[in-house]
Image 1 (cartoon, rainbow, N blue to C red):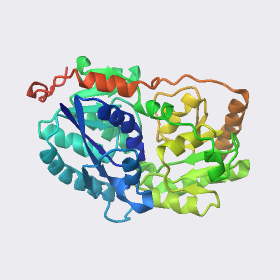
Image 2: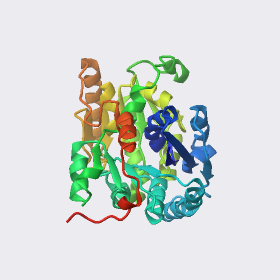
Image 3: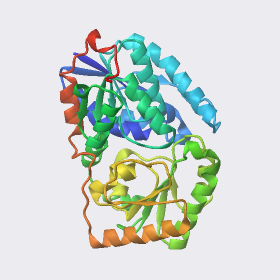
Length: 372
């Protein structure tokens, strides 16, 4: 039996791990060890540990990542260091055969580095993508510490090869978040719960950009101003806790626009597919919205360079550009335009599980060497 070790820090990585965990549970040849940390254990961030448990998964370990409400790059590093320290004990205790890490999130970077040092094979999901800000550095660092790679598209696959990774250890499987959204049960009652009407509201989800820490407040004020001038209905989902988040949250909570601290994956998907569009800089706007033919107003630099479906409307931190994009979103929705999603067809988790069962997890693969 292959024991697969997974750590999750926030809703963004859990939504991608969930369809994989569901398949592990069903497979007699596989088992898992799950660690919850970060926002999952913080009440002000939704305490989404309960969502994991309600989904039927066992949490084997918990690591307290955030000890204060400090908002800075330094506090991000200290939080990372806590996980990097504590996760080594979880690995020693559980003795996994494989670490499945993902994306560009701090806790996943910590377990990837730990696994490489502890001679545990690491498979990384969604390496090779261009994401901008500190996230890109984290993502590519994880690539160099990982032994296998589950890429989400051909562009990312090509970049992994350019990073010196062995082509035979790179698998183009798509993004498992597409699996999650397609497997979500439809719930039209979501509109009544939040007092909304179909195709009559936008979702705002704008995260801080760590390399633009000092501009966070001004950036969100521009977005809020554009929404108010447009006179469109909107519902806000509060951002992640990267450096600069507190300034954004202060302005969002004072905007008189309805906000939600955190949403279950199923609730988010049901709200998203009934909306007029997504506004902000979330990767959801790049990876997921085109599956439902929902347009995205992508603001600023956070997703610079990332492969885009044609439903994404890129704008700067500019009120007039955002207003124009909001109008274009309404036209797209009213005309019923359809889009192709380059990040997969909803079978990524099946592909990942199938490949894991064929991997060489012996000590032979631990020592890496660049290919050129």
